Amino acid sequence: MTAVDLHRMTGAYALHALSEEENAAFERHLPGCEPCAQETAELRATAARLGLAATTAPPVDLRAQVLRRITTVRQVPPGPPAEALSVRAGRRTRALSRWALAACLAAATALGGTTVWQYQRAEDARDRAGQAVRTADEIAAVLSAPDARTRAAELADGGTGTVVVSRGLDRAVFAVSGMARPPGGKVYQLWFDEDGTMRSAGLMDPGRSDQTVLMRGAVDGASGMGITVEPVGGSEHPTSAPVALMGFPG
Image (cartoon, rainbow, N blue to C red; front, side, top):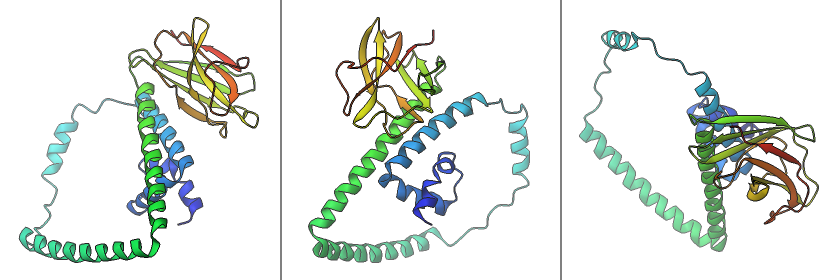
């Protein structure tokens, strides 16, 4: 399985449509690939929103059908005694543990500082992937909130922006498609608009024209949002004219 194949699995992984082997391979790949982690997070959030829109009530007689069909299912015959399995498993575990310990000591001796550096990089990648998953969960929570309200608008550069606000969760999500990339050395910054006073709501990814962003911080008293072009790293206050201004849905 090539790296290109793994990059194409984000959608199937988000929908739990991979085989066990493919799922394991993709999860090994995910911590070290930030674009895949971000895309998977966005796809999960979208799937959650679409799933709620398509939910249907189960048939009234579903329980009776299940109970009736249980009587027609053949029971699986018993396997080896649990005690025997436990003994065999224990022997294999001890043997593997000794082998693994020896291998780790040999690797540490041979690689020295390089091993520590690679371990730290892997830990950093896992942290980033974990953060992406947590962000995806927060995005999904906003999109699926009972009081979620949506407003869409055409942006000046031809893109389309959509903001989803949950007053109950006090959070907002901004999704954009077809947005022009910012000039070199610049980044789009999101702002909460509180009666004309702009409060930073985080940065967008300058390398992506389609993305979904959890706006940083609480909605609080904001009645809308804005987007400006700022230096990489963002600004405390807007330093350019707004690229877009959108009012929040009522």
